[in-house]
Image 1 (cartoon, helix red, strand yellow):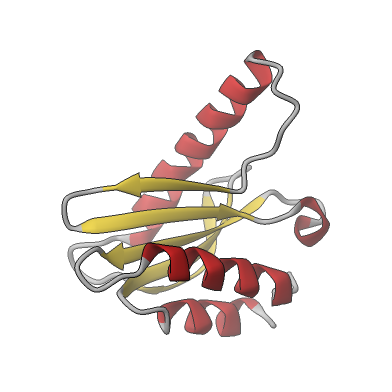
Image 2 (cartoon, rainbow, N blue to C red):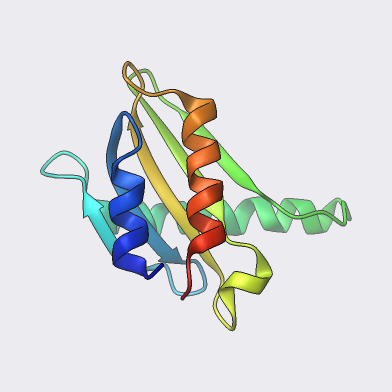
Length: 124
């Protein structure tokens, strides 16, 4: 599936408020859906790029020889899920899917499973 279809699919996940595909080399969003006045997905994409980069530096410093699958940030009213795309899916760019969920309506396990399925079908 293409980026637009993948983001539309992400927005069908129960509790989804916003979704984006982000290049974490540049911090730029390749596409975004949802959000609204209180959730600027462009700002969130850029900010979460720093989260990913920071965690990768720590993994490298610890010499863990491992890869990040996803990063979960829990807020009182939201879940922010960052799903790094597998190396075979990202070509020359390093990408992640970013999903914001309403915590009261979301099923976190199902959301993680759904993002994994979207990643598997995404062609960038």
